[in-house]
Amino acid sequence: MKVPFLLLIISLMAISCKKDGPAGPAGKDGNANVTVFNFGSRVVTTASNYVLSGISRGRIDSSMVLAYYNPVPEDESAWYPVPGLGSLGAYETRYFISQTSNDYTFSVRLVTPAGAAYTTPVTFRKMRIFIVPANNVVNVNGRMAGPDLKDYYAVKEFYNIPD
Image (cartoon, rainbow, N blue to C red; front, side, top):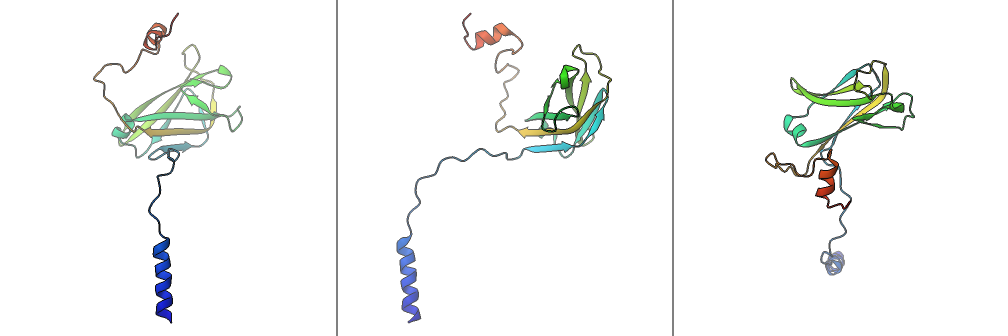
């Protein structure tokens, strides 16, 4: 009695199987290979360095680097981009990335809006640095891929904007 019952179950399972249907809609893009460095509170007077451990030169050279900080006088949910004007426009942040031994250092400088060193201490409650690798790197052999974004007329011409 067990064998015929087992055969009946297997037969029903085989009959109820269908071929694969059409592919479903594409899913939301993910964040594969994005690295985020989180740094805690620090007081910055003129400059501060953030070590990016474990990042190779190839990765830095083929990635977009984004940085945001949360200054103390602002709400904890307020994030300011680097580079950019700081809280109340009192200072501006600038940055550069340099290699030190086997690591890279993300250096943030504080300057006045006029460009002089900003020496008043500023507390960065948090700093987040994103390393976002490119899906595709195109070498253009020294030619610009688009207009000079600092030149209004070049941008206007590139996008065929009438006067």
